[in-house]
Image (cartoon, rainbow, N blue to C red):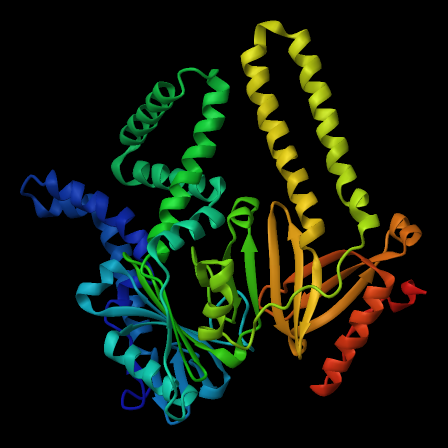
Length: 499
């Protein structure tokens, strides 16, 4: 049975937190009926009895769940309990905790309630090991006990706080049109559910008029496409900006503390020894101006909805080494020692060159055959040619970017994916396996691709392409040497293809 003296219960708001998404749908008809109340309680209850019954049942279920859910922080371990009929107890040692997330949601701040997630490497990839709505003082006690475990002796505190416009650069790199469009669509549909179909229709009509006013020089179809893409990207940019303003990272011994957000503030307490790898992202524009966005892989960090595992929102090329030496000196990028030979340049870019040529020829042909639709053809042609030309530029740049470096037992892998350039830094013990693949053309050119599978919640893979056979063999020899120093058995597949 649940022992009230052994566990600390959740915040009382946890009673209704589990079904809060349905409360609005139940309260709106109740409030509407109260506004139309004529003075006869029996007739009013006759019309809303089902809503009242469902609401009471949900509150009762939440009350029972709250009574039999709790958290206990002892010396060196965390114990949680949840469940009414079949209670589940979970014991987590402090040394096994990878991260603790404390989320200060804006509407919970007045009542001092916070969401807490506790994660370990052995937990479920899709759900945290422990997730509760706690009082702020209970969450502070949990974090202080874990911090004492990670910092056992007095150490120097190192702090990293980026400028505000660096967070803007991060939003530029990570924003996309799809995320903003989904947010806008959800907002419109939810307004229809809460305020009625008429309000939803008025909102859509107003947005349509605004789109026509702004994009008056475009064809209707082109205006819709441009409006959706630009509007979605702008919404996602603003949301990312709000989530990451006020960012700061503090390193103290084995503890890595990160805080970000201005509306909903999130605090993360990471075990630095359980960080899987560092990932540096760049687009072509940020590459030209010399900026990186740094992400870090640690179980639980950036796992929640609309969260990202940010370590460096944006940092210049000159400041990268200094910033990493402050907060994550264990993982610093090394220059490329093994990279694609010059003879592979044409093999890398010829598919994009062919695609751009075909698109330009087709665009020119349609332009001549359909003179009455030249405005639409011009817009659609630009929408197809510009991304293809941009991808060609990325592929060309990837030739100079791709490669592998080493610093002691730490390896640096550089590659491209889509329109972005990636640099991943990890220890040899964080590499799950290496797969060697060769196409027919690569066999003729004596080259191979390396697929490096990294240890993380999402099973990350990075592909370093078109390395010479000599470089592949040299890298594998040094990787095996590093694994032997760490007493590991490397998992390397398809070695026979190199013969």
